[in-house]
Each structure stands twice: as C-alpha cells, then as structure tokens.
Amino acid sequence: MEQKNDGKLMEKIISLCKRRGFVFASSEIYGGMAGVYDYGHYGVLFKDNIKKEWEKNMIQMREDIVGLDSAIFMHPRTWVASGHVAGFNDPQVDCHNCKSRFRADHILEDFGIQADKAGIEFINDELNKLRELKKLVCQNCGKAELGEARVFSMMVKSNFGSPIDSLTEENVAYLRPETCGGIYLEYKNTLDSLHSKLPFGIAQVGKVFRNEIAARQFIFRTREFEQMEMQYFHDPLDTVSIFENWKQTRYDWYLLYGIPDDKLRFYKHEKLAHYATDAYDVEYDFESMGGFKEVEGIHARGNWDLSQHSKFSGIALDYYDEEKKKRFTPHIVETSVGLARLFLMFIDNAYTEILSEEGETRVFLKLDPRLAPIKVAIFPLLKNKPELVSTAHNLYLKIRSEFMCEFDDNGNIGKRYRRQDEIGTPWCVVVDFDTLEDNSVTIRDRDTGLQERIQKEDIVAYIKERMK
RNA sequence: GCGGGAUUAGUUAAUCGGUAUAAUAACAGUUUUCCAAACUGUGGUGAAGGGUUCGACUCCCUUAUCCCGCACCA
Image (cartoon, rainbow, N blue to C red; front, side, top):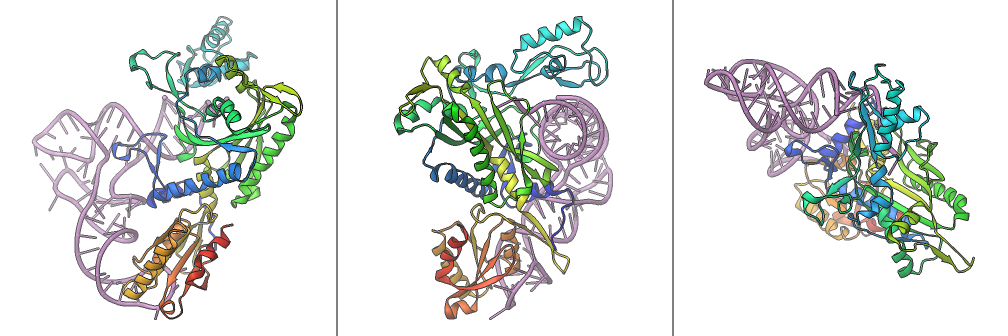
C-alpha cells in the first residue's frame, strides 16, 4: 500500500538528495553557506534533463523561438535602465521598541501613499511627514518608535572590470538578478542576424544572483540559481491572445511530464508592476512545503523593457512590420521559471513510499523517464558467477552510448533494485542463467516491479519506445 | 533580519569533566538462481573558533548552519 506522508516530506527529500548525491549544501566543510547549493552527479543529470526538455519544447519544437546564452555581466547602465538599481530593493524600517521589521513602502501604502519603486529619499520624507503628524506607530507593539528606512539591495555587486575601491553606480558590475536583461540587449542582434519576423521569441537558461534576506526551504529560494526565460516579442494589438496562448502552453508543459492537473493552478497578480498589463503565476501544490507555491511567472510586460533600453542606450529598438506597414516598439510576453523549483517540484511529485507486506518501506522516485538521471541499470543476477558478471558488463558497455546507464554487481539483487528505485531509474535489466542460453534478459519496471523477458538486442528499442 | 529551539559517523540515536558507543548505511570477502537475507573483516564521528581546566564532546562566550514562529519574497 502507498503510504501517506507524515509532514516530513521535505526532510526526506533533503536527506535523499544528499545521501544519493543529488544536492549538497555548499561549502559544507567550512560550515556551510546559506542559500547556495551544489549539484552532485545525479543532480546534474536530472537538472540537465529538465533543462533539455524545456529547451526542446521552447526552441527545438518551435519555428518562432530562438536560443541565446548571454553573459552574466552586463553594462552597468542595463540595470539603471531596467529600474533595478532604483527599485530592486526592500526599503525596511525597524521598530526600536519591539524590534519588529516592516516594509517601509507597505506602511506608506496603508496611508494611501504610492511608494512602489520609490527611491529611499522619497520614502524617508514621507515617513518623516507621518512622524510629524504623529500617525506613525508600530503595527506590532503600538508605540511610535519606527526609525529611518534602510535599503536592502537585492542586487549582488562585483568589482568586475574596476579596482575594488572605486565602485560607483556608473561602473559597478552587478551579477544579473534575472536573465531577461540579456535577451533585451540582444534583441536587435537577434533580429538582424536571424531574419526573425514578429512575433518571435528568444529563450535562454542561465545563472542569476539575488541577495535574498532569508534564503530558506532548501533549493526553493536560493541566492544563486538558474532561470529559464523566454521573451516573446509581438505587435501590441495581439497581446491578449498571445498572453492567453502562453498561459495555456506553459500549463500544458507540466502535464506532459506527469504533474497532475489538480496539483497545478494559476494565481493572478492583483498588484501589477506599473508597466505590466497582466501577470499570472503557475503554482504547484508542494506537499513538502504544505501548499501551493509559485514555480513559473507569465507576464505581459508591455514595451517597458525595450523602450527603456532604447532610451538609455540611444539605439532604436523598434520594429518595422512589412505586411502591416507600421513601425512600433514590440510588446513582450515573458515566461520565467526557476530551474531548481522545477527540480524540487518533480521530486516532490515523484517521491513515493510503499509499505510491503513484510512491513518494509520501499522508497522510489516516480520520475518521468525523460527526466530520470539514469535510464537503465544493468545487473548480473549473482556476482560470484564470472560469466554472468562479464555478460552484464559487456551489455552495459554496449548500451551506454545510447542512454545514461549504470552497471552494478554490489550486494544482492534486491539491494541493487532499491538503490535504483531511490534515484528514479525507470528500468533495471538483469542478466541471469537463461541469458547465457538464449540471449534474453529480464527488464523490470520501477513503478510496478513487474518484469518482462526480452532479447538483449531489443533493450534499446524497448526503452526508446517508452521515452517518447 | 528578530524571537525560541537545536547541532555527536552518510543517517538515526546513546554515554561521559579523564581512551566516544550502537544500529543502519558504505567498502572488501564468503555466500545467494530476482526485490535492502546471513556471516567475516575494514574505514568513518563531537559544526567552527576562542575561553575556564592538569585535562572539555561535556561548562562559558562568539560565529556558522538547521528547525519552528514573525517579517520578507520586486
């Protein structure tokens, strides 16, 4: 019988990820580093498979989207133009009495003062006005002890390209907090070099960095992570239909890889960025975190990005539509998803425990075969029979050019099955005494434990058929 | 970032101001004709730094990390 989880799923996932070499906390031998994780052998394979499937759907299977891999470092003015330097931060204010901390802009909004994306001077001016009116009180302890607002920038700075003691807003090189900036900067080159016609998209996967105040919940929120983003450039007249289309396309992608419909939902943003016209999140119901959490954002961004970069760079980033005989700055619909969030989502969904009649628990990851780090493991039935071992090993040598696969002759057969179950390997092939007679092997299904007897030569075709 | 709790082997736990234990996992061997069997052997542990002490895993301080709650998540 399948066991219901007892609220310890996150602990079990973290433990499995470490024990089986998927994910390690960074810098463990130095005591760890918060919000940074390293991916071990199976973690890399799994993560790369997720990335490949995303790229296949977003680039390979489409005529209207092209790839890009832009640099992490961009010209400092990029982030001034995008509004990140001014707005990508949390203005916070502390209560001197009870030590509670609040978002300063949220406090102002309670008084009807629009402070989203406002500068720190503006926020402190408004806070001072409220102080004079004696309206400023701590929402927690009720005393008027709120101090000056301070800015916690989410942007990670570097000394890239300049001596470290002379950093200014003009020359500081930020580590990008999102990958889409690189897409906007290469919009023009892409258009010129690939004769793309609107509507078209640019997709890329890459590392980004954010100074999260509290990086928690394993790999769900980290300071260094990978984003998979796609920016779709189009005629503003088509925004509504294109936006709806992308919502559906992205939602359906999750269903393709075994995420059940009832664990997915859309969340509509009520509070939009000033340039945005519509924004939805795809949320997944994480059992390990007790509810729905955002995995992907789908946003209609208007022409804010291109027009800002055009304004700050002095380079025209518009588009002339030959058919419609009109010139305009393209509008953008963006899809943006965190790779590590998908990693956690797929494991959260795949983690399964079955209690056997003997009272033993079998743990396995019910991963889609396309995502599983190892596709097939090959064992000899017994390890003290050299002819079984060598036949199995030769079979492994033959198959490994087709799929990521493993050979294992450690311990006994049951133990080897369990190890593969835990890393989500969909098939295990066993070479037994019949193999020596008639070249047949058994192939066992991870989810059912059932075996079929097939010919050695048919293994590759068998697996390929089931990975479509 | 605030408040509270915690940190002993890969994991789960025990003990003790005086040589740190066990189970399990790992590895090697024997065995085993399909689901973590058994036997033998091997390696591995006090988060980091400082203090008190003849002697600290144990007492004290600092830092880090984790968990719970608050706040935050453009």
